[in-house]
Length: 95
Image (cartoon, rainbow, N blue to C red; front, side, top):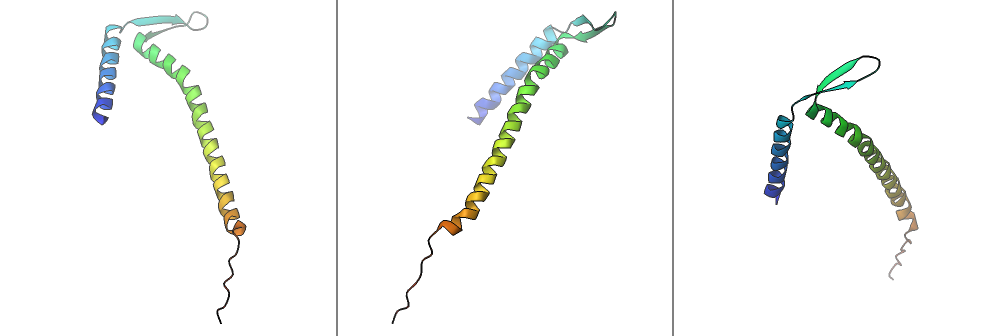
């Protein structure tokens, strides 16, 4: 199964490399005023992907971190309450 996962990622990487190589053209876009910037198309697409991907990813990681902290606090609270909630067993002396 691990082999198939690696094979899939290799196929995706090769596909993206070929796609980027075939589309290696300059793209000119206007900034403000009469300032223009030239950038290669695959690099521009990568930057746009990261701009769209990073904010939701960071929000997801923050929510997971917050939930993990809540779970740990609940577990600590249960650990503290656990010994006091158990009934004490008294042993009767045998005569």
